[in-house]
Image 1 (cartoon, helix red, strand yellow):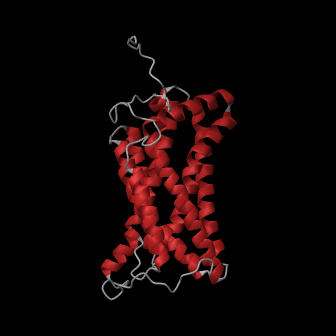
Image 2: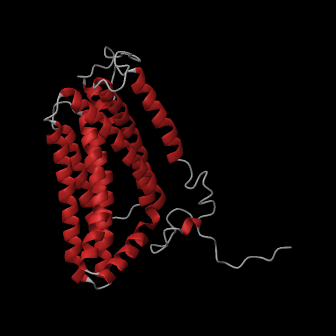
Image 3: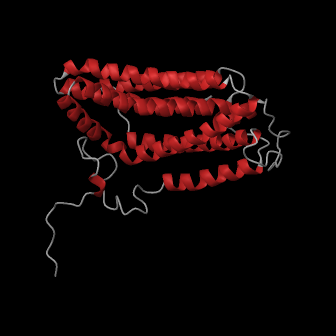
Length: 302
């Protein structure tokens, strides 16, 4: 349940912040007449994300067991890929998200109502579709026959909406860069479990061999139906009797991904070697601030 709460909180907070930034900018600039198209775009994005999630859940129930496992495994891998890209992208651009959205909104205001709807839809819709896919994959992996995974997601989304409202009202201030870094790291751990379970689904669908090659079996030590077995399953998608392929995939994904994620921003790319301390970048800084050459006068060369 905690892993699903974390997914709902992290993904929902990103969408909430996007909405807060868009609304606050329009109110601040006196363009309240543009609020209605923004809310229309947000509503359409939310409905499409919910429809996508329902289609995944109810559409898969009409398939055979083998087809369900193949679909679940394939979508789990896709979901992990999208979430991995998302956490790295947010870690790099969290400081400049406001400036980026302001620029897009200014361009949309100049183009008209349709552009405003499209801007809000694209800004929120991407988060919504990613959330729907990853939530479905995570719930599918952690499902224990109870509604607890879905309750966890719902509580996470509700918390995200409440925190977003507090941000908008100015009642809450936290270091968003650190928040997204640490929650992103936890999401990588959750994603590793989803990825391993996805490959197990593909093995059950006979798409990938090795279903009978168990790496270990500690079901006697950690029974799946015990409270601690259920806790490990809910938080880390832990399985007491994984296959060799599951353990291999889990390690090959988790170790290098966490190492790269917690490495300094710009590591290995030549970017970000000289940058302001965390949290000191101005709100309206351009998105490419970290890599743009300095315009300050240089000392003459000898």
